[in-house]
Image 1 (tube, one colour):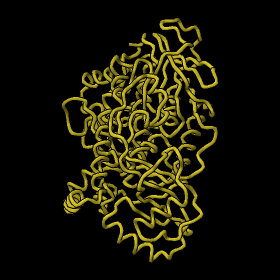
Image 2 (cartoon, helix red, strand yellow; image 1 turned 90 degrees about the horizontal axis):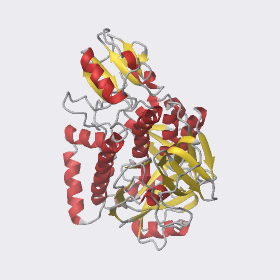
Image 3 (spheres, rainbow, N blue to C red; image 1 turned 45 degrees about the vertical axis):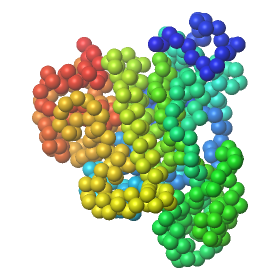
Image 4 (spheres, helix red, strand yellow; image 1 turned 120 degrees about the vertical axis):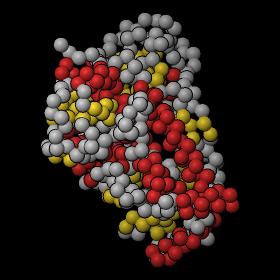
Amino acid sequence: MDSVQFTAEPSSKRTPGRAVHTPLMYDVIIAGCGPTGAMLAAELRLHDVRVLVLERETEPVSFARIVGLHVRSVELMAMRGLLERMFAHGRQRPAGGFFAAIAKPAPKDLDSAHAYLLGIPQPTVVRLLEEHAVHLGAQVRHGCAVADLEQDDEGVTVELADGERLRSRYLVGCDGGRSTVRKLLGVGFPGEPSRNETLMGELEVDMPQEEIAARVNEIRATHQRFWLRPLGEKIYSVIVPAAGVDDRAEPPTLEDFRQQLRAVAGTDFGVHSPRWLSRFGDATRLAERYRVGRVLLAGDAAHIHPPTGGQGLNLGVQDAFNLGWKLAAQIRGWAPQTLLDSYQSERRPVAEDVLDNTRAQMELHSTEPGPQAVRRLLTELMDFDGVNRHLTEKITAIGIRYDFGAGPDLLGRRLRDIDVRQGRLYDLLHRGRGLLLDRTERLSVGGWSDRVDHVADPTAALDVPCVLLRPDGHVAWIGDDQQDLDGHLSRWFGTPTD
């Protein structure tokens, strides 16, 4: 598999089968320094992997779109000691009302110590994650775009737009929905093209807030893709359906917003002085494969979907969290044979589920009588705690359970941030290692101690004797038998050292 060379089209610069003599310069090159790429770089550096991140853009984006870190992503930030930095720039909101914007409160007692949404500007998330990666030793080069690639048994040669050639053991495409890496690999990206366009931005609004609120409530009775949300100082987040877009590559104008607001609401609300303006569609696509030899895909390079429910950034960051320790294990030489392939087998079904729930949500945003009737019915059903809880756990990603085989319901799920004698569980996961949480005080990680920590704590807030956690916080084993534990340590963390 690794001996095949890939390109999007024939290239005069390449001779098929040619030996590559460029020396290996890096362990991993990451194309794209968005949230996914920056998170992945940091995760790899926790394991001393040589990482270079290539970012096409020379400057950060000029607009500060607010995104929401859902519960699971907030947990991941806590696991790596990043949450306090995020708090300094974000605002907590209730973890409910996300599914198709149906206004239901979050279920009581969600299984998380971080049961809230953290609203934070996306550029801030990128900056903080990039700073974290660089602090750990990652190299980041801005203004560098991948133009071509080829791979062989030993590594990947990456050619940049300026002709420079770089060499690494692996390449990960985190370069967005129009991923160059994915196209060069020839990986299919099937799905549905965009059918509905939506304008989104932050603008100043002159109309009094009470009038805006009354008009918005009236319009949203039938137009769920319409919203004016106050952000303070007369600044509003504005979302309005677009009648049609001739050129999606062209950013919308203030006049586009005024026209569409008048068409939908009968008024343009006096919008002016935009902070930023953008548009998005509802295209939904999923890469056929997440790995081809030594090249992998993550984030929007592997999946795109409408932003309803606010899952996109979260899905990509969680991809990186799943992939990072596995790719590092492969590079450090202790990965079990199937570990790296488990990245696709675990994460691709998660993306499939997100694509399905966003498809469903978009149908519920339709103004047609049928979808509106379904929306009214689902609104009633969400008054039942079980329904509301299921949909909330789906959107916030705390309901994910990877298939680790037969066992208790907790097996394959992430473990919440419980109390332990040393303080909080997630504080023990900052180094990105596995963790045996041992309430019996008689087990051992033995020859795996170079990659798995052991915490003996009979006071830990668990209702099982012991758990083995992977570096991403998912429960890989439950029990109290040393021989059984050793088998699962081998399964996830390879051969023990002598």
